[in-house]
Length: 284
Image (cartoon, rainbow, N blue to C red):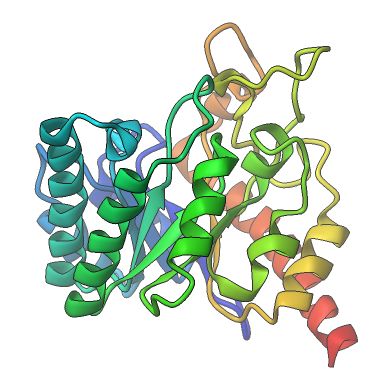
């Protein structure tokens, strides 16, 4: 899109990665990102992205071991750190400038530890050596994100990835950009329906990753907040055609062909980008 690169995630549309990035380019997207799996090489996907003329915006690190980064088990902590370090190597090898990282996984624990700070600090220093930036994403476990953003404030390799849908469910609509927008280096834009539980209990089934304007997000407000941050990077969208267990909100998307769905993703992304352009004009 004119004056604003638009980026979409690979892996949620029922095709191989190389097939998806080709459709992304045909639809109008300028960039893509993907989740790295230590069992698979992304070489074919990256080659397909280059052939399609798309920018590799980031690689999303695995997060299944994120809680182990904070634990007292030295062996488990080392395995978790080694996995993230390997993902940094993959980012460097394939030219991804940003690695997206979840600070924590889990809903019951709320106590950051010195061990976790030390491990993430080591990761930040390794990222600096490799010329890759770490974007810590807002998920569950706000205390862990807060601890890292404070402890690693002086690390030039560490920034923030704002997930607009996560903010609405995992963060109870707290303004995460007000907290960390000055360090914003990436976005995961998607819509959501907030927290479903009447008592406010958060669970992963509320993390829907709907198309923008299909949920209850205030996109004028989102654009205004991004404008206040002065964020000029690619607008990256993380969307899904798959409903969470017991839910049906995303089912409608699967009635579309991949080409139709990705074209709709592009239309919605352009609407968000247009609001961002307006926000920047007001800011200036």
